[in-house]
Amino acid sequence: MEAFDDLLMLLPAKMVQAVERHRGFRPEEMRFRIGRAPSLVYGGREHFLPIEKVSEDDLLLILQKATGASLYSAAQAIRQGYYCTGGLRVGVCGQTAPDGTGTGFARYSSLCVRLARECRGVCGAIAAKLNGASFPNTLILSPPGGGKTTALRDVIRCLSDSGRRIGVIDERGELSANVYDLGRCSDVISGLDKLTGALLLLRSMTPEIIAADEITSPEDIQAMEEVYGCGTGLIATAHAKDIEDLTGRKGYRRLIDGGVFRNAVLIQMKDGKRHYEIRSLA
Image (cartoon, rainbow, N blue to C red):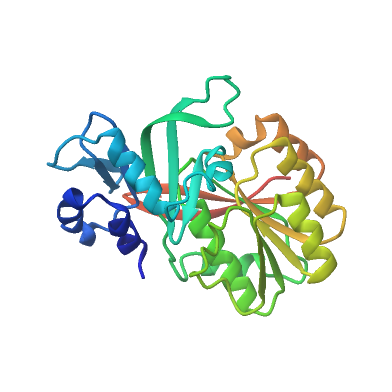
């Protein structure tokens, strides 16, 4: 089942027909904000649908469907800001718990449902350039929503199908989503933080390369340093609009100065299409 079909299954009945009309535009996201019409994102713009405004009940219904009517049991994942189900990533925004710690939501005000997509071969040429005798540890860069996870998914598949053993840390179940092909030589561990997952893969599966999505927190930085010290190749994604943006931030600067990552794949939009370019971080 395509991610678009997964999206339709989450929607209140009153929205399905209007959204279905946009299937051919291959939407990347659908956004829901209380008191506003829902919108679909494609072609670099939000397109608002001519249907009634979103209510809080609509948001709760979507979340209930996304979590299999187990919103309470999914609370731990939602505390991190999003929940993955099938080929969808449901981002959450609203009023946090009264204690102000940001560890939970008292009310929801908006959702962003991102549709994952398998774009086979989009990074085939990039993977071929990286696939030398000695794999150059690489970060894939773009701003949020720029296609990093899609690119990483394809690079993993290409390297894996070439015979490289890839250990994939799928922390939130977004990379594989239990439906995407990550290649014949990939082994996936999900539901663990990056450091714990990496150490488990190193002990149990002897990967040549470890792949992870979204290196953002100090704990993620530490995990990459630990793996680098074990002599295993690394490929991961990071939020950055360009090399200068990346190197200007303390955590990433530490990884680059420490030699953990040598290359970056920069994703840029040109004429409405994504372009991929390898840059040196040395």
